[in-house]
Image (cartoon, rainbow, N blue to C red; front, side, top):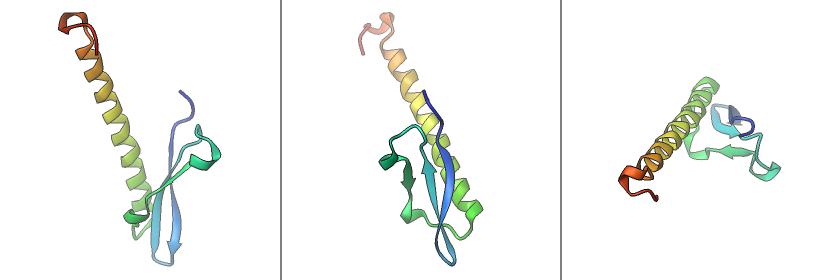
Amino acid sequence: MGASPVPATMAVHPCGWMPIIHHPARTQFGQVQRFPRKIKPTAAAAIEYARRTIHYRAVLAAEKRRHLEAISHPRFGGAA
């Protein structure tokens, strides 16, 4: 599966922090995902936003996986 994403921040001006997610498993061009419209007043708030984003993506991926597994069960038709 590879390395997991890491929440981080980037200072964008004296009173703002941009949440970013560092994806170490991706190529160099796509390793950093920035959220310029979600600038927060503190670094802690920006890291918390990035952490929540990573968590919700994992929850949605698991939900999608469970749904596909349920509809591909032989009792329900067998093919997704």
